[in-house]
Length: 177
Image 1: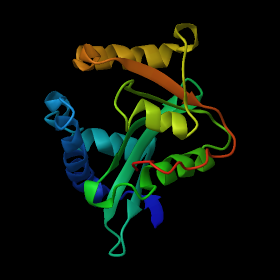
Image 2: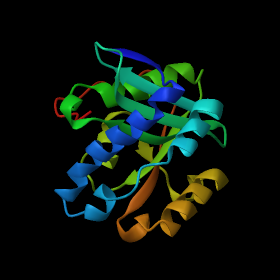
Image 3: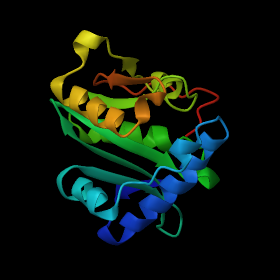
């Protein structure tokens, strides 16, 4: 497994990974999420230019998982982590998160996620994230949540989570990514 920065030519591949990874939402009664359009290439390019766009690549140097993040209120905010289903359950998502933490130079990591989807909040908790109380949600995270609500994601319970700087959480036996 090798992690590297995504190239501009690979941005369309990230969309394909996202489409494939989203299919599992259909199986749990969330077809709207499975059908949700991935970020456009221009938006992905913004993460490449001003944030972080990382990929796990296969032996042919082709992305099979990715993470995009950007600074928000002094933390690195993970916008998306996706693993192609053909490569799931191998620790790739966790490896990307841990790699970002190392790159972050001591910054905390934040994300927003579905509270009750097994490969979302429960998974991130195993990766060392904790749910934030309402009074811990920063202005930047509130704005992200506002945008998510406007996109219709509040149909399901969402929450903000944070991982403090430090050693990575130990992998669990049923980690999906």
